[in-house]
Amino acid sequence: MSLELNALTAINPLDGRYRKKIENLSRYFSELGLIKYRVLVEVAWLKSLTQSTDLTEIKKLSKDAIKTLDALVEKFSIKDAERIKAIEATTNHDVKAVEYWLRETLKSNKEISEITGFIHFACTSEDINNVSHALMIRDARDQVLIPAIESVIESLIELSRRYAGIPMLSRTHGQAASPSTMGKEIANVVYRLRKQTSIISKIRLPAKMNGAVGNYNAHLSAFPDYDWEKHTETVLNDLDIDQIPYTTQIEPHDGLAEIFDGFTRLNTILIDFCRDIWAYISIGYFKQKIKEGEVGSSTMPHKVNPIDFENAEGNLGLSSAMLKHLSGKLPISRWQRDLTDSTVLRNMGVGLAYALLAFDSLQRGIKKLDIDELKIRQDLDQSWDVLAEPVQTVMKLYGIEDAYEQLKELTRGKGGITRENIQQFIGELQIPEEAKRRLLSLEPASYTGIAENLAKNI
Image 1 (cartoon, rainbow, N blue to C red):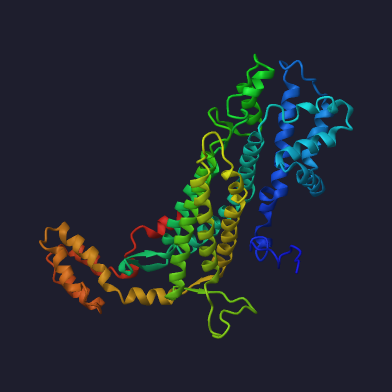
Image 2 (cartoon, rainbow, N blue to C red; image 1 turned 60 degrees about the vertical axis):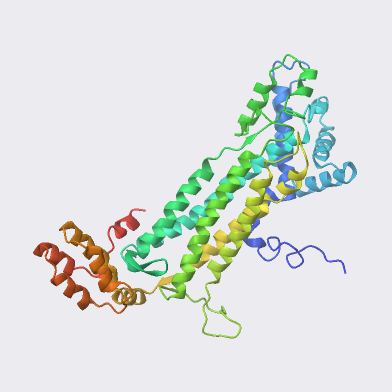
């Protein structure tokens, strides 16, 4: 049975079940996207040759001819890509197919047809591909991925400020610990995400256009006195790409590894957040708003599962697994070039798409959260032993020996410590009355330090 490709027959769930949620990336990382970027780079290279005043052997193009070239990129269509793929079926070479399509398309333009021999002049395929990959990653990052994570960050900022003053029992090692506020705990995540997002946003991807083994061999065979390093640097800078001067046949991909590692760190922070929120839902600190018609369990009608955070965690893991492979593999190439990077690079959009899918799940999950202040307060009211910390700290201030040991004896492993137990202990301390009054006024819900201010100021 032959099955036509559609959302139900796609092997990869990104192009099947989840297509609508990640389709904004397809203009960058699909086969169509890659071919269009190759056309863009080939056109940019050809224009640069015709516009150089020192390359006198290459005919200069008129403004109308330049507009014709630019229109090939601006109006590039699926039909154009299909024609290139048809040519590739004969050439069995994807980049050469783009070159042949350009020559074929431009042969009817009398002015440009005279210089079509300079399409792909002195280039190796990697000169076109590595610039295309840099542009794809940069544009997808700036236009889709960073806005998506910034939207998640904004949702978390809103939660942090909304819950800034809601005290909660901390749990270090899973045990009752000094209280914080829910808003402050979310603010911790915001701070980490902001830092990594800033790092990723500022990474400038390098590229190269220096020929078969990185030495401008072919370029200089035709124009031995021309400054090709300066020329290619200008071409790349015009595309807002940095030139890397030392390469083999391929750009070494260290820049790609850097950006993939950045997204992996971002994913790790979000996995940490997903697991914490999942646990808070589990112990009742958060309820989830119910959507009419949704089912939590096929057999247990009462359940409202934290599926958005679970889905996000799973897809973040898939994203990181692929991105880690990309960052670990791509900078390694045998001698001056092997092709193991070529097939791997075609999957960079997959790794990033799983991250985008996770960002979408997080947004939906965050919007469903509804805090249960009563449950949180009950936990605090049953945890008076957390005040052992401030009491022994003040005791040390006034020179009471064995302060820590006294509180350890009173509270450690005892359970059931009440307000009365703590206040009786405080009342018997030999410390100034003002200090005693301050300790007696403490309760778990008020012992949160500057947590509220930190959450409000995030």
